[in-house]
Length: 112
Image (tube, rainbow, N blue to C red; front, side, top):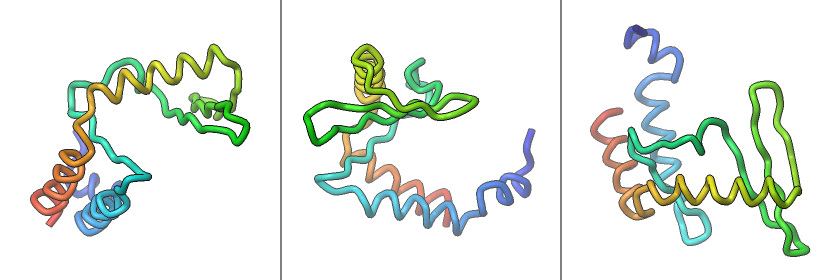
């Protein structure tokens, strides 16, 4: 078990955590949605980080993180699988306004 003192050193302490959460809540806007997936609702789609980005020509590209390196792919099957995983995760997430409220409340209650 990690002691609270060690944990504070690892994450920067309450001031850093509160500032990070406040920043995340502040950037939420119509172009940037922030959604929280409640504990216990994460499925296999979140075993590693990934991002899906649109291209100017209407296509998409995916960036997939692995234990060894990050991979960028435009392969249609990979994109389809990434989109499906993203949607499976997003379905479990709180709506954006509830997520932002939770982030603000957590910053205030837990990290003040």
